[in-house]
Length: 221
Ligand code: CA
Image (tube, rainbow, N blue to C red; front, side):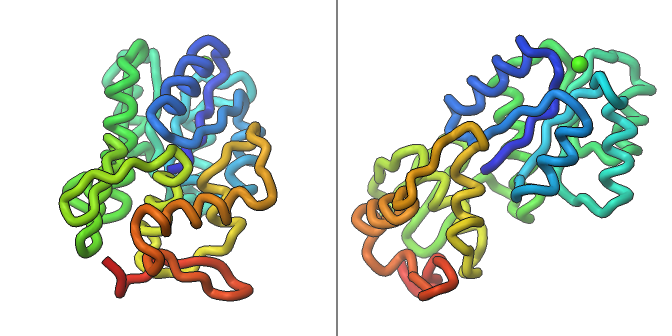
């Protein structure tokens, strides 16, 4: 899951970025509304965390503009404004959830997973296919009831492939969901992760579609 954090307070941003990375999420942070719009138009994101008090534009008006422009991503709003009116206005502007500062990191993580689950139309936070199970919140994977240990990247790769329900994803789409802007990507890194996943879960789980990309094989498992 790739998360965009829009927050200008360096200390808070740093804490959230480090905390979400520790929870196996791919996350990038921007500090202004202008940078947020640029980031949103560049790569695929799964969920947005938005602080309402930004230096160049009020977060609420940014959100309204993005929604008017057709942005459908789930948005969790962070606010220090404890007034009911502010929350109601935020929900009207298109926020999907709210968190009041200060908040607990584990609560933020739980809510992000809940938002993604809702966006994917799942009622439980578990992705299953045949004998394969993935719990995105805990990062636990099992095959035929046996736990499989995956690295952070392998986990992210498996999640994005499973969530695509057999659709073909290009190498660039896969890399987008695996790496944040600040991370250096080695040219063969994706191949290496796919190789490891096949070794751990079975050679036929990920199908290579030559010249196009990869897809989770819905016939497998
Ligand atoms: Ca702020």
